[in-house]
Length: 127
Image (cartoon, rainbow, N blue to C red):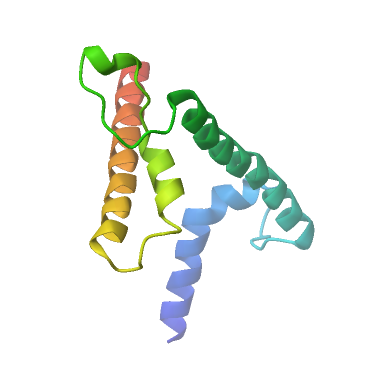
């Protein structure tokens, strides 16, 4: 039991060691103090606000229509983005339904697209 606990603590230090240094801990300090919780929370707030703001901005700019326009005639018709679809429909859908799982699939598609774009940009940056 003690060996498992020791191995776990070493693993935590290996994984989170740079994080502890990044938030101001030095040496053998490997815990988060109360002042650092405030700083971490303050750093999260702009990111959350930006996410909500970008979703609402895209909803307003694109017209927020649920009908998919035809191409090329309907290129100027209103559309709904994937993030706006998740934001608007998640509160109304029954939990566990096919619609509920479809919204999570849309989120997975967004995550995969973002991951691919970041990987491609990282590869191009290293050239």
